[in-house]
Amino acid sequence: MKTFLAKKETVQPKWYLIDAKGVPLGRLAVKAANIIRGRHKPSYTPSVDTGDFVVVINAEKVVLTGRKEEQNEYMFFSGFVGGESYRKVSLMREKHPEFIIERAVKGMLPKNRIAAKMLTKLRVFAGEKHTHEAGNPQKISV
Image (cartoon, rainbow, N blue to C red; front, top):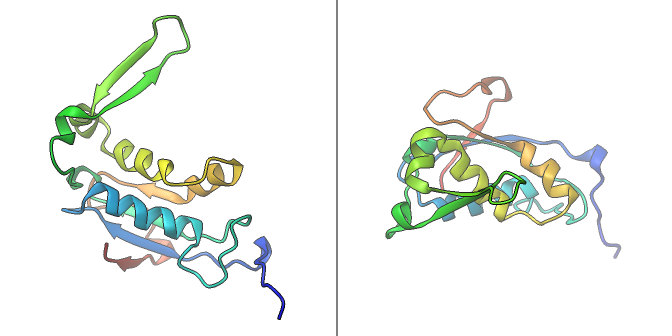
């Protein structure tokens, strides 16, 4: 029996919708990363992008357990000497809630060129409304 390897041309991506309201960030990120990579499919091939599109709504209502809201910080670097700055999760939730989920999913993807393309399949929205109704996203629970 030969090993089946998926090809980029034969992949038919689907759209999935995840509601982040009341869901822990880690569980949401694992589910989204596995769908984006295509690990939920029997035709999964690590070297080929076989994943599907993921739309996440209600990003501002994702839950962080413990004291992560006050303790965790995101580091940014301007590229200049002394240009390192830190921002708390609570501040990022107020100003840019999509960033929290995008960064969590990015950390769960492999660190290579394919992952950069896979990350473009993630669409995160702060509120209930999204702009991808044309893809007929199938709602899944986390």
